[in-house]
Amino acid sequence: ELFYVLNNTLSYVVMRNWSPLPDDYFFKSHGDIDIMVDSFRDAVWITKAEKIFQEPHRVHMNIKINNKNIPFDIRNVGDDYYDEKWQNNILLNRVFDETRSIFIPSKEDYFYMLLYHGLIQKWKIKNEYIDELVKIIPEFQNTRFDYDEMNKVLGSYLNYKKYKVTKA
Image (cartoon, rainbow, N blue to C red):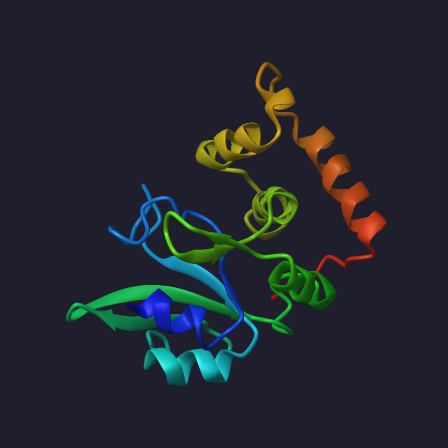
């Protein structure tokens, strides 16, 4: 029901780890659902999200679903989680996943978002994300994941698209 409402009120994407949705909320070691929206204020109002931490820069929220508090990270255009131009393009290019009835990033955006998330935001790509990257680009299947090479791949993409590296 939550995603039905979001589908009809906001421009959003579930950024990663959507495979258990909508029947289950969590994917392996991830304890929250990461979404990006066009309006943080509207997303909080529509979902009745409540802050987990009170610092103004924190985006960890609880959304009550079936009387359970489900943690969400609600990112929004302009918060510097990704370059703002890229955030707008992610929402513009989003794809409706008919199986789950949710919006997810396009294949291209998803690949580079995962790469960026691992290399820039986390400084290390989890093995499960490497597995996801290989699913998207099968040519990586029989190669050792090389951080220097992947940094070059990401850098070339960011330069080509004229996206900046940002700090949320």
